[in-house]
Structure formats: C-alpha cells, structure tokens
Length: 195
Image 1 (cartoon, rainbow, N blue to C red):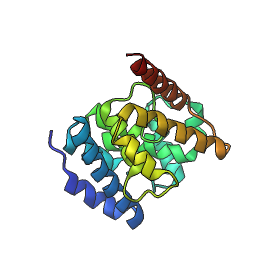
Image 2: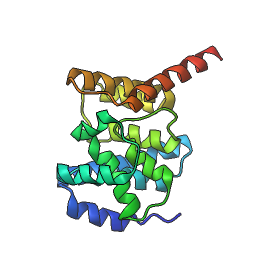
Image 3: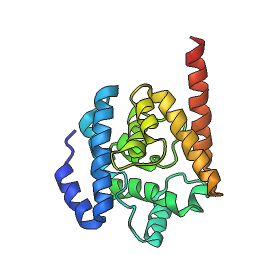
C-alpha cells in the first residue's frame, strides 16, 4: 500500500504546534526503527506513528464531538478523561477525512494512549514508539528504551505498568482496556517463562 506521508506532513505542519509536529516526526522515525527490528512494514509504521497525534491540538469540544461521532467502543473512563479523546478522535479523523482504510493503522492511533489486550504488532510499535521517541525525557526513559529494543512483550507490560502508575498518581481513572492490556501481557510473560 502507498502511504502519502509528504501530504500528511504538510497537513500536520499547518495544524500542529512546532513542538507537536516535531514529536510526530520523532515518533514516526522511532516506529520505523521498531518495525525494522520486529518484522513489521516500516512505511506503514512510519505512517501510523506520524499520524498518532493528528487531533491532539484540536479544541476539546471538537475532539469530544469526533469521539461521539466515531461509533468506536469507548468506555466511560475514556469519555471522562479529556487527555484520551485525541486518540479516538484521531482514529476517526484518519479514517473519515484522510480516507485511511487499514484497520491496523486506525487501531494503532485509537489505542496509542490506553493500550489493550491482544494488540497487533503495529499497535504495540506505535504505543511504544510514542513512549520512547527522541523527545521523551522522563526519569526512566533510557531503561524503557533498552527494554523496548530487547523484548516487545516485556516492554508492553512495563509500559502499561508505567501508564497505570502515572494515572493513579494523578488520581485519574483507568480505562478497562488498559487494565485488560496489563493482565494480558502479564499472563503472556508468565506463559513464556514456563516454556
């Protein structure tokens, strides 16, 4: 499939702040590297990473309207957490405005903030690429980068653990799909260790 990234970059440059645009480029580059390492289509991963925050800087009400129009299954905790709207809105936007039909790309954008059980390889790559992109500088980012490039399943469990701790610290609400994702990867690693 052909991914028109130059056209999408132009759109992002015109509609995002310089900082958010640079973050999008960094995530896209990270996703390409991860795709090459883990056997996913690098161009597809770059494209999904590039567009993951396409709706991040839309006004809150615009984001919420897109979430409600999307028809995607969205739990109450997501609806009540403004910082999560952009992912659902972005997935709907790329599908309906950009005409992206690839469900894997759509889901990669949809779940890049909350995660879920049974994520596809591309979904994992975008979720983790966003977490370890070059502009990230949180306390344990170097440790997280090492884990991501060592074992994808372990990285997903660690990333979900990190996300859950962060939400709890802020007295936020945990979407059910995040908890299910944590349980899924926890079980997966236990099964791997038994082998």
